[in-house]
Image 1 (tube, rainbow, N blue to C red):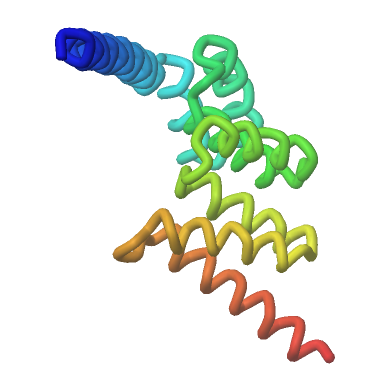
Image 2: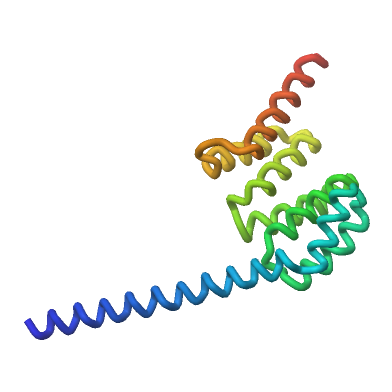
Length: 161
């Protein structure tokens, strides 16, 4: 009985320790994410994107990516900027990094899907629509916009036949 009790206490202690370590890691991740959101480079990059100054955005966002390399939003915006400059290889690279960091990132899944349509790869776009359907249980604008883009792509291809 004492052995069983000792094992139970040890198991509880181990679980508590893992939970506290996990909470510390989550807190550190949250702190890093918050720092990234307030980064002057990221803020300048966002402003440049809003102004459709994609070359300027890339300059600021590249600096932000060096400051916080594990920020999916930074890589998503880099991908978006490169895509708008029609530099598809670089756009794809940054969308993939964003999705490696955060596989269910709604913006990155929408934008990479749109990139795949621009590259005439609708099957790949639909894979990301499926990810969004699971990430957006009650619907979201990213799912709706990618779905509409796929439907438009298909309608245009049907009409040109």
